[in-house]
Image (cartoon, rainbow, N blue to C red):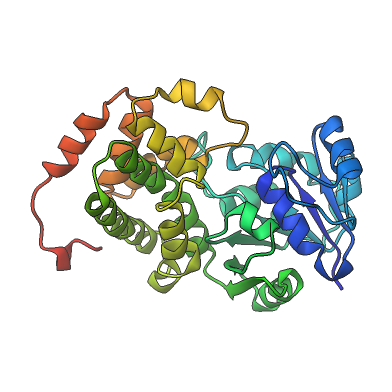
Length: 333
């Protein structure tokens, strides 16, 4: 049985550690905070991020990064904007055969690079994969049934990782479409903010359905341009994740948009949050990437304006509704 360790003790990292610990597998979970690690080991609960959910005795928290690096599979669950600094920290300490699975969704704000590009720059010789899908951490931690996408360039590696990380309730599906698997997860975070705005501003379910549908068209336009396969984007890591996060206040991005739609300021929303809301950081980088490739993404651009230019909810709604009428059969790509 492959050894599996986890870097990142937020909700998602803790949930993946719990999932990996099924079948009595010993899992090390890296925490940055000594008190959090002590509390997890003493109470078997991550009260900060997953209150009320029991962590198996087979999961041990540690603040020593070197402890978790001696493993067959390393789940890296640090936020997208901190991935590069984390990889730089561990790159000279990793066993060259350790498979690094990136579990963050987003685009690096400083460079406009996707997670696979960051990994390729920092760990050029390391085997790696991307894990992305419609997965709420609290449900995975509770053992509720879920599926996800696991993308790796090598079929042998992908199938091995999928087998190692699967359980009776968590089912990874392998693909070699690394671009498609990660792009859907990055863009849906921004679109989920838009859908949250619709809910918060009481604009109706019709509007949300339209946003999800036209948002999917934006994912497809950009994804196909960048070399992703449409079937991947229509799968778990694209359409599946989009539907989940655009339909529930359990999504951090949706709930942030909902609060914006109700008139709260972005600063006030963020100062009361302990978990990272990736869509806030991804929006500007995503729009820059779209402009670079001459791809129209009006919904994502509207979210970027709302977050980063001080635009109001009524103004961005008015702008979207004022766009030229198009033939829907020609508007998808």
